[in-house]
Image (cartoon, rainbow, N blue to C red):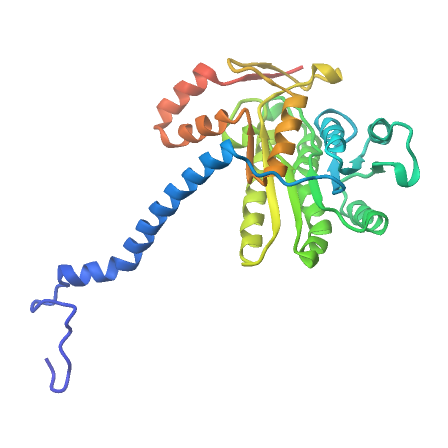
Length: 324
């Protein structure tokens, strides 16, 4: 040791760190792990309590915008939201379909008595989305809940899918979410209140043949919503909520539209069932809603088992999807 140099109390005489010093180095991490375990136990207990005694916010008189409201899930959500007392802004590229949805909700009511409005918008076009946001905010003042539900459903082997079909699906199913959020989030941030909802799919938790572009868009939507929530959480006083809905394959028979031929060991879900679960999730401010709920757990287990085991379970229970 040079003259005047203080001894390093963190090391033994041979220069190796002592066990006590190693423990001190890792103490902050150990503390975080212990606190994390305790917090997780509390969160599980709280989840069980809320499952038995749920706390739900009211949607009465809330302004709720639903894309893809011209038919199917978007239309059913619009109907159920109206029954909750919400004022529903129906949006779809299908002018005839979206008008019909609003007309059914209004039941002949017009003007201030009407509880639904409609707009014909291509949500894949940012200029049209910005015009929509301006028109809605001028008429309704604000949007309390934004439901990004518009989407294209199709199946085919990847090499049988055209460039245009891939681009169109990505634009509508994924990129449109960026345009809608960017158009309506600033006003929510200004008020520090609002709720952003996205329709994803159970396909975002797993994989299946013949839906490569579709599954990719749903993985993207799920990642978008998870990361958006993290951005919002960076503000300690944030009061803007997010919910991502992951339905299993929908029974499209009631709307006379068959997007694909699905053969599954698990039962497909009905459109009203998914709409009801989504609205319940919004009222409870759930971050993730899966229909049926048990599928989320099953899919997460498949991520942690060895690949050969995951392949076995997929072969035994996965859905076979073919184009129609």
